[in-house]
Length: 303
Image (cartoon, rainbow, N blue to C red; front, side, top):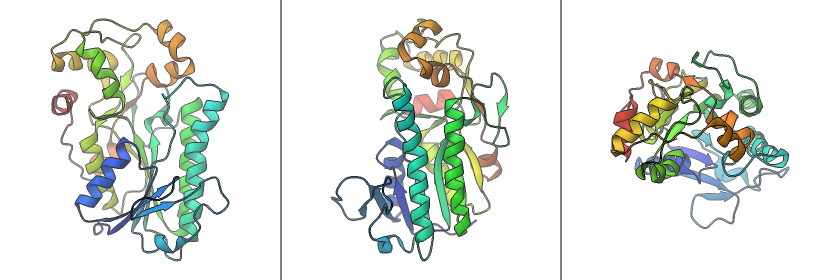
């Protein structure tokens, strides 16, 4: 174990996970610095352009960092995938990570740790296979994107920085994300399986995710990929049943595979119908204890 960090750099922190982590860090009186793409409006914000040869004009404000947490990435489900959209998805992850690593390596005193977002999508569609951090990557657009993403982050190791790849599963929170989109449908009693419902879903409650990130920050022996998922993944059919039970609503109206493919194209097979049965092997071995290890307790606390 290491001592708690005193100064953390965040990039891509405007989303659900980032805002929650920044809030938690500030509650612990940790000094936070945020890289943003607009004009800074608050103390601790620094403008950067990850597409520029010099992403940050003045590196002095970044000296003395204990850790950096990089969370950039365009929303996969924002719109239907086409060639241009897929390039945007890749560049928002791979390109921004390359730029941040360049910045960190240029510091006189680089941070000890870089935590970089990734996803369980790296495993691809794997049926009933139990997936630990030792499992091989899958095939297809999302696995290939995640592999390139992690490769760019790994380059920070050349500066002696400890690298941890945060392989997030589906994050459950009422404020935003997949659950927020599903809540109105399920509350109307219109929820149901996606396709056959047999595909596995790796999930984690937002509260556990935030706690786990800080646990890993303080666990200096942990390096490489870490699955940020609860220890009890569920099939889509089981998720549907439990969610309906928690809301006291029927959930018997399935969305057929052909309808999902018509509506979402390639994204349906890659994100909605793919089966990923990930488990948090390294988190558990690092001594992390889940507040919400099972789906029903998590959903009851959230909704």
